[in-house]
Every structure is written in C-alpha cells, then in structure tokens.
Image 1 (cartoon, rainbow, N blue to C red):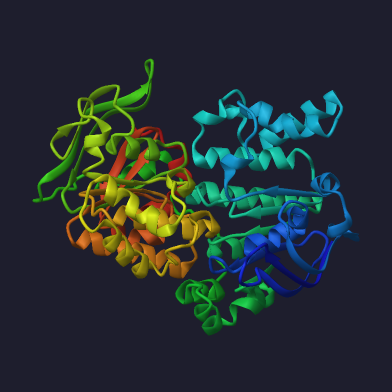
Image 2 (image 1 turned 90 degrees about the vertical axis):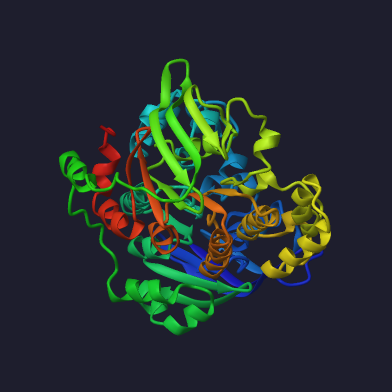
Length: 516
C-alpha cells in the first residue's frame, strides 16, 4: 500500500535533514506504529506519506513515496485526501465548523457525496465513535479529548484506505485512549484499513500495532514486528525510549485487565481514599464551590483544600471536569457559587493580574501561550512583566538548563519542545503555585523526565504543584497526592502509590460512575 524509497527531505533554511534515506514498506491492511524521541522526524514522515510534503511544506525532496502505486510528488493533494485520512497533533487547527455534526459533514460535503450517503455515514461514525451525545454540541464546548474523537470521526466518515494519526490519544485519559485504539483496530480488521499511528504511549501502541518503525534524527533505525523491534532494549533506551517500559512490554504484551467492574465495587474500593490531611498551611481552599452555566453545573458543591508544598495530580476520564477545576483554581474561571481562596485571596474579588503574581499556568496546547520571536525573549517575557531585575540573565540560565538555542524562533521547535519552552517560561518566575494541564503531551521519555524533574525540583523548593494528568505511571512516580474527578465531583483523594492500582483495576467502572 505504501512504499518509501530513499526518501530525504530538508525544510527550507534548515541546517539539518528532517528525513535521511528512509526506506520503508507498509502492506495493505497493516497496522504500523511509528516511535522515536521528539524531533526524530515522525511527524515529517507522516507529512511525506499524506502529501503535505511536498504539496504544502516545501524544501529539498529526494526519493519517492508511492501510495497505492501513485507517486505522492506527482499526485494532486485533493486526490490523496480521499486515499489517506490524517489526524494531526494540533486538533484545534483541524476544526473548521461550529458544531460536531457540521464538522463531520464538512469533508463529505466538500467532496460532493450524495445527501443520502452523507447522513448514512454520519449516523454510522457517530455510533462507531460513541459520540452520539455530542452531535449537537458546539466544538468550543468540548474537552481536548472530545475534540480528538470528533476529528477522527470526521476523517473516518470519508472511508479512506489509509489512516495516519499523529499522537491521537495525547489528550485522552487511559480508558478513552484504549477505546480509541480498540476502535481503530476494529476498523483496521473490519474494513482492511491501513493504519499508521505516531504515538508516545508505547505500551498501549504495542497492544494494537503489528509492526513498529523507530526513528532518530530523521533516520530509520529499526523496523519490523513489535517483538523484533522491542528486542533491541538497550538500543531503544539509548534512543530515548523508556528501557523499563520496553522490557515490561516485551515480557508480556499487555492485555486489557479489569478485575473490578461494577459501580458498587468501585465505591467500596474508594472508601479509604477521602481522608487526606496535612499539617501544612492551606494555599487553596474551595468551599461549596460550584461552576456551570445557568443552573447546569459542571462542578457542584466541592469542598477541597490544597496545602502549601503539595504535589497534587487531578485524574479522571475526559469530560469529568479536571481541566475546568484547574482553571477555577488558577483564577482563569470564576466560580458560580461558593468560594475559592488562592493564597488567602478571594478569587471572585481579585483581579487576574494580581492572581498571576502567585500562579503559573501551563495549558494543554503550548501554542496558546507563546508570543515572542525568540526563545530567550519568550522565557524573559514573564520576568520582565513582573519587573524582576536581571530578567535576561535569569532567562538565559533557564535557556541553558533546558538546552535551548536562545535566538531560535519558538515555532521552529517540535510540539514537545514547545511544551518544554512554555513550562520553562513559567519555571523562570518561580510561582507559589504551578498548574499544569497535561504537561507531557507530545514529549518523548527523556523530555518527559527532564520536564518532570524540573517540576519536582521546583516543588522541593516550596512551589505547590497542581497537575492534570492521564499518565498513571507519571502520577505514581512524581505526585505525592492524587484526586480523582468523576461527573464533576472529587470521588477519591489519597496517596498515588495506593490509589493508582485501584483506579487501573476499576477503569471501566469509573466511566459509568455517577460520583455518588
């Protein structure tokens, strides 16, 4: 189905090749996973397959990419779009319409499908993706994970022969991530769909992919079956992939295990996880806090205290209210009822400019908070806004610490590197409270550890860390406190090392949990 021959590519004005002499074949109906460190060339390779390179991104292009016998270089981009469906890292950039239904209809209407066929496919894909309840929703009201599902649905509605997904579960919780992979695998088997997935969640990817391709600095290092590739444990560790996780996958390709799967059992399992207390001074206090529009509360009657020096992780399925809760604590949203006190300040009565002196916030999409022409200016921006002396000197120390090139443009970085830059700009101002919404999205293992160790170090120096996170291993390894959000309520609060196993065992029951 796909044949890549001696492919090399360099972006305009780039000093190094993004891809170098790639040779790879993907058979019809195959499920291929592409892995590698951030900046390895994974996304660029996907662009070469779906025709974005060379039809949209120009540069020095050598070699051939054949899709179903057609040379991508010589084939019109609109023709390729019917052969290859793509879901990109930045979901917001892929959304074109106001509502979910219109988003799914958009592609089919543009390609001139018959009306009867359009609505037949619409009903099919809504059911297949289990998003019937989102049909009338505004795109702007969806969580990051829900948008991801809608983007995939819009592509699947076109029934392409090849599906290329760039980190499709980056903003999904573990249960939703597995559901997406399960659905993609079902489509792969049922319709003979050729699937190519770029993914950082290697453990999950290996359950569903048949083959893996490993990239490093634009070169194809390994390719073969999952077992064949994972046998190179030491080499993969050198390439920046987690040695321990790779070993666990190789020893046993993980099956979806659910030991406790009823609402009654999860209530029983969570009984001992609402007794968290601390001798430290409270830094954030929520009292009878509710938030919503009109009387339809998304979060209701929440009493919760965060203590100075906490390293707290909010977990739970997509749409449970985690990100909304983090924005309320950060002062970005104001509660509808009750109160939130942040560093003894009433959030409702305090201007955001005042709250910003105490709080640093990293959003899911780092591109929303990058605004300067160079990396050095980006990191110095907050320091200068707070009128901190020697702002550029302090910024340069952060630049060196993260290994950035100070004069480089932020948007010349990969998605994972931009995430690191956004975090670095927050770390630079040493906030009392740091709020992170899925901070490791798009990062490879080494980048993830570097970022989280920087956060840990800041926490050890006294900064309170509040993190929204789906990666249970990350939560267990770094957080000291974990709160589980379900249906707009906090249903568990305790030690991650004790609570994470309970949540993993009850993942299916949690999706149905009513919070009572």
